[in-house]
Image (cartoon, rainbow, N blue to C red):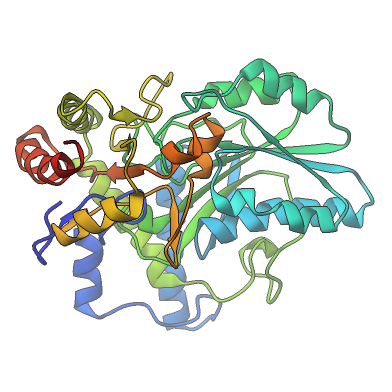
Length: 387
């Protein structure tokens, strides 16, 4: 979207602007401030906002009969809570525990290895193919070789490539192995078709509010009934002991407001058509350009991860920034050093190619009538590097 500061913002996989209804609610200034655990009137009003959000989430995802929900500061904390919580429980009971994840998973998952291995647990990272897809048979075989309790992290939508792994495959893995499954669903809302239709048989789901128009510093996770873990944050026992601490009531309520806005305006087909038009035009500029994961079995509707061979990502990022275009890169640029994208390396791209990728991730509100403006501003920058 073109924002009021006259910039084009194409970095929705990183974060999104606040939804209109959230902005309006904040502007009114009458936010619930009391501790929702207090029994006085103000405390009850704060608790009411949490309860309304919880009911809305259960209605939206149809999980009230199968799952509980707890709120946290965002996906990194939520995922750490679930994974470490299960590993702590296994450690306490002197049981073997194995955590299995993809090499293309988010850093908050990939970087758990050291902590889990300190407890004597096993961590296994499996490969993907050149399009970012997994082999169902290989993952099933891998899980079956493990002893004790196994937790599989299953990334619904990859944050860099937009590659989608169908939840039907996660369910097949669970049915064939009996493992626990955590679904990293952070990038799903407003980016894939029927994002709210999920599988109640799967054990955990985690989301972040700022990815779809809610406030930063808040997220939520679903936990299948009967599953418990050692809490990461201990305290007064709020949220059934899963995450203690006084709840962030305004942040939690922003989840409901943002989701209602998104659900009223989201059109998967229109978003996908607009993204495809932009992608087709960009690829027509040069035969050297590559879209990572373009031939995956399934993709989301808002992401183009473009590899520009022979170019340096820091130079590309600077050029777009100076042209008032906000984009992202899979690479981490720090102190002049360019680190290749771990995701692209895992997909078999060379180190040079993995240092030459930029990501465009668009708003769920993007439509075909916006495409010409977007193509013009993106193409104007890219053409300077394609001569």
